[in-house]
Length: 227
Image (cartoon, rainbow, N blue to C red; front, side, top):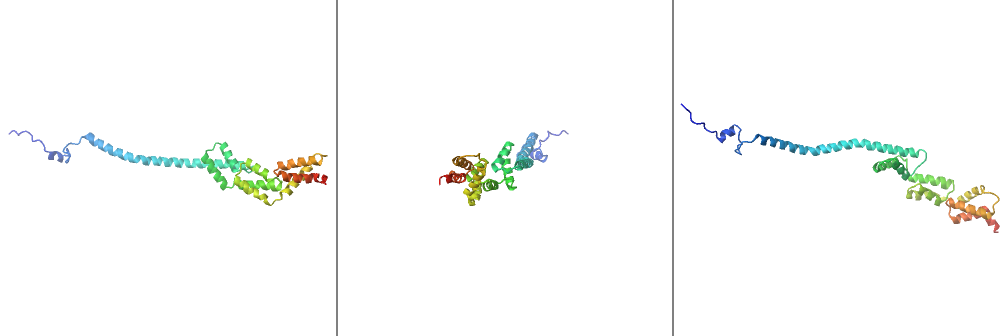
């Protein structure tokens, strides 16, 4: 007995076999399914990219940290070598580092560390300068200020240091200088010539011209010729 033509499967039959979507009523092509999975993976990758970039930056920062510290240590060592023979001002220390081609950020960090170690201190530098050349050697404030400016000391440090001379008798200091100089002058010289030389000498050492003239006249004996 011949059977009739095969009965085509219903949508329900196809859905039961997983060949159609129960909601869409169409078979999902394999390429579409693959594209959907790939798209999902792409979304995960895009979310992962910023995390990877951030970590890469952290790794670079961690790697750069010791390099920067090493550069600062090297710069501080250069300052310490420069101060081994004589004190220097902060501006001079900066010039030393610039001469070694250190970048500005390394120079700033090295100067801060050198200050912390008291390797450079403009106020201390200026006070020592004034005590030595002002109090011990009798130089005037004008010359001391010029010298400290040439050493590029900070202006406020210069002003503060020069107050060391406030209690000094400038005329007595100038007279001591003049009498020491008198012994080195050639003899015989007329008192007027001696006075002129002493005035020039005292002015070069920073004393006020009027004070230098008074002292020179007295030390040369020119005032006695007027009596």
